[in-house]
Image 1: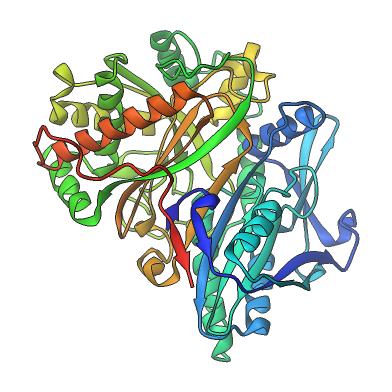
Image 2 (image 1 turned 90 degrees about the horizontal axis):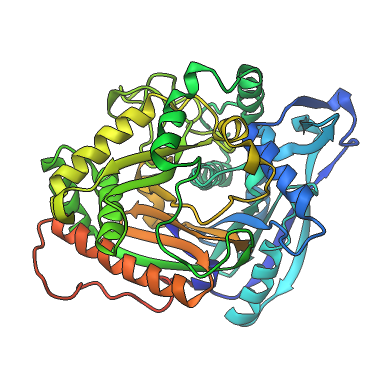
Length: 506
């Protein structure tokens, strides 16, 4: 699964069919619904949307996945597969309502949900199709139900499916789950078999339990010690991006969405071998490379950043044998046991700070990888505290903001090959499209696929941000090649395109 801007995806024209949720009962009919407290992530996201609805800094974002189905489309089978997806995952049947300050999440009963089909029309050119889909994807509204949309571009010999979600109901790792589940169910239904799908826990249960466990947390709780240590070293709650992007801290600006290749599959394998020789992994090598690139560009010798950490793990079954969560690509339990949330849809993401020192002179990669690995191991021991709750307790002066207070150093990594259905991604051609209208900084999503290592970045649209992101990209590639054993001092051999990688559907 490749993560690219939707502007870089080329989908062949065809007939667009859309499906929308409808209910057989009123969404407020408690006899046909389950009510729970929204998660901390959902509450903050929803309150930000409420606060900015009538301002120029309106928060708008979406997560979209597109993928292919080979052969003439069996529309009835696909509709049944989509309905099964919605009925299996409570969060997709949910709406949100704030009562007495608390955000409640109400999920309609599975049997109360149906799908309504609409043939939107035939699009004769890629440009017209792209314009329609782009407008459709940007119509998702956090404050309106339903919180996602579904459709397909149908041709005589194949089809491209799309599902677009508001972040409040899903995360990036939910997208492989969506693709795998629909493909599996569709294949069974077209063969007149009942779909056999793995169990999937409810995110409503997860979020409600999290709220109950941490609602009474106080600033003097010993469980906040990791965050407090970070704050003392950092000088504040948020690690600032170390370069001037040319924007004031207290404003949001239009964002540029770009995707670049980093290493092809062969060189990524070499990177893995080089990382193992230093006691690390591709994840810690990329983390070390990001830190080293910033240092070489004039940044500090101590790297500080926020990392999204997957909460789709058994307690105590984190990466490399440590407790807590794991980087988003480090799927599965450390002992190989099934993950209870692996096939669930929801916002299973905590955000944690990390800090470590770059090796001497920015050239001692083995030392930097070892420090990154040790820092990540320490981070994993403290992932139980939800980020939003820590922010509220330890930085209350900025918690009322509907965005982070200034450009923040943000690093994300996913190995999509290790997600549900990951081995079949080359057949299904799934792509992930993250979109946000406005922001005040720069975010990097590094990810590994069968074709190699890639990065998608969103940053403010300023000359400084373009210059800095381009320079850091080149330095990251250079460091990765050095770790992989490529010691040439010449120019980077993988060109940096002016736009992101293009995915072609025919």
